[in-house]
Length: 69
Image (cartoon, rainbow, N blue to C red; front, side, top):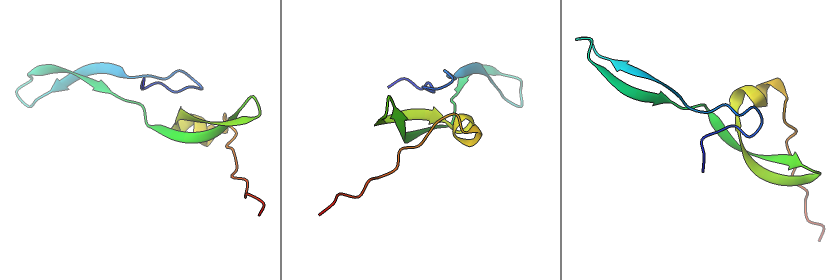
């Protein structure tokens, strides 16, 4: 599964590890993605959303519906 937010499209960024001796080695920073049940076309689906989209209210969480017995 791709490490990309389904709402805003945020993905990994690249850069360098820089040691005390100034040695440089490539590295990646990954976004803080959470798997959330979200309403998509009036149906609940599990999608990966970054925490910034969750906090800003860009997604509508799906509520669990109790099964009637």
